[in-house]
Length: 217
Length: 352
Image (spheres, rainbow over the protein chains, first blue to last red):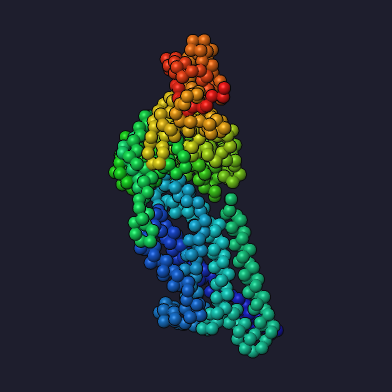
């Protein structure tokens, strides 16, 4: 294999890590609060706002139900407005982030669902404010579940980022399709797949390790 | 001090968009618990115990009525004032509700963190509490590493951290085995004694009421139907439900085959079956043999038990009075005149 080819693979790996990293980070920063909101604004919850809750629920479901490939194309004008271009890894990170936010939110909501309602009741009996309950009870107690959710999100983002190649996004998926598939190069195909497998393994192992560390049950 | 006046809680269930009816979880409850006393509320599950205790710290907001704790009318407080008032009301739960991700020390520290106390102040408060509940050697353990009794001790220490004047116990021993229950109740009694803290506890176990309560209320179907000093409640409950609780507790109910033969009204040839309750001096008086001598009535004892309830001795007996109707009538007067509670359960056909 030529050194040019090796450079290409290296670059594609970094591109994939960049897209997954950026979209993973931003979707966590926005998705976790959204997930908490979905939980605490439910009827009879600590910040009960049933109408807001319904609106957030519907918006989240819409985000979750649009197939990623369609979302990516539909978002092109928005992407262009945000990063000035609709191709490249920065551009691909926009739909990835948008797709991941509701994904993260539902997983966080699910993690909070697992908590015993008694914990909230105990905190209220101690005179905790809703904000204190979120910060000192809900988030720490659901930490293991939230990390599990974020791990699933990262793995999903790796496979979604491969699709981003379809709009000139770059990365390993793009490389695999253009060189491995379109140019019939089984070596490249195999290498990209192996790198993707290793990447997913790595994220999963890291996530499992962090969950084990935070779980005291 | 806790005072409930005319407190009601109604849940409106809305199924299929239309009001299908109101559930009255609590109906016009009046309760007064003076400072420093331990008050028990006993009732079957679904009777409204949980709702009652949650109305005290407004985890459930009463539909009507007033709740006064430590001299403060709770229902009129805004959110901030309510949280401050709750710092003066500790609460422990059946399932402990400890934070699994915090160790023992940090669990007890939680209410103090919520109040914005400094690290140093928290340390100075938590360490003596660990001592008080006997868990000084478990400071850095996590709840998952503790037994049920130890978890409840942590919960008690946590509830006491903010130096409350009132402690609410929601079925605090129901998830524990009898021996552990005993040790937790002892701890609660000590706390009441040494700190002068007022305790309201709800339970379905007479054992709990018997061992630590000063007064007891009986709740049934959302209503407080009986309120008495514990000694009185155990000697002469005024309601049918109270008697059932007592009988279950003492395991003193007429034998089944007897119940089947019981008839409500006396016949030509029947003997009365009576339940005798005697306390105080009557326990040590040889009444049964006196009965035989003075009224000519023989007594056939079917069941009997003597219990000691908070320095009072309580005797219970189910007996058949053998004699003519006149004789048995006279015997009952005789017993009543000696401060015995007597209740006719029914009449059985004479065997002879």
